[in-house]
Length: 200
Image (cartoon, rainbow, N blue to C red; front, side):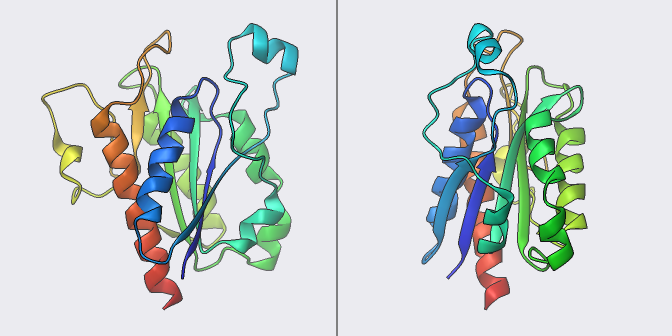
């Protein structure tokens, strides 16, 4: 049965919430085991607190040694100037040993993100994360248009064929909408189902 890691970095809690929804979707696949872990914060503690970072996140800190233990890795990181947050990039920059051993080759990779605005680099961030997953030899599961919420135009909403997204607002006050959370659940389920098929 598939083992899935939901690996995220969340500054203000939006991606923590999305990660929980992704995990919920993955756990709906019969037999799936799902862990939620986060990457280490690289911003000094004093500065993080002064900047209002959400410091009380329950997920344990992941290490690159964890990666090889899973059949699927679903990665969530916020957007910084059109690419993934430095904290997530730092984590993957340490994964050379895993890459050399081919630990993720043929396993499922997937990505989700958030931005402050509707056009704040969601797709470029996802593509950047997907490129990293492909370099590790992973089979990528996105968020296809088979999920009906992808095509909604009756509300402002995240969502991309490359992965689930949420929009936080410039001041971070907007929380993930039900449509965005449903997209995250759909993607988590899809990734876990794909991993289950691959391991046969």
